[in-house]
Image (cartoon, rainbow, N blue to C red; front, top):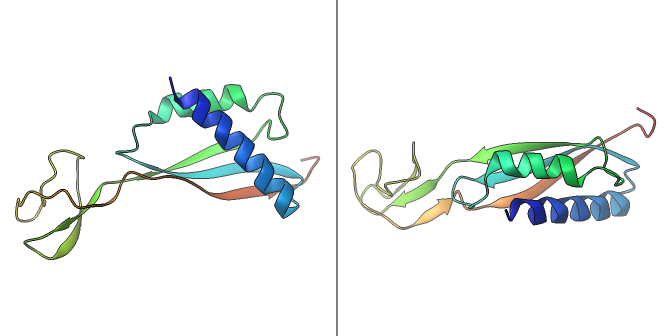
Length: 118
């Protein structure tokens, strides 16, 4: 279960970012998680809840934004969001493509700070 090591890394990264930004208490971490990232969202949420205990981020919430698969259709010459990750076909014209523009990411993009005693 690599989600445990990912959660540990998130906590370390967030603690460092909070310290560098002067945030005394982190209330939430905001993460973009692509459908094709290979990470099981529920396992990451569980792992985060375990790993955060006893750290400076204890009590913080992990807010995950699901990122759908976005491809570029060579036939339509347009970006398309796939309703399902597979098959990798344009949902409009059915053309196969391997040009994935989004959906693989795992990005910690924001922290929410709060009052230290809140």
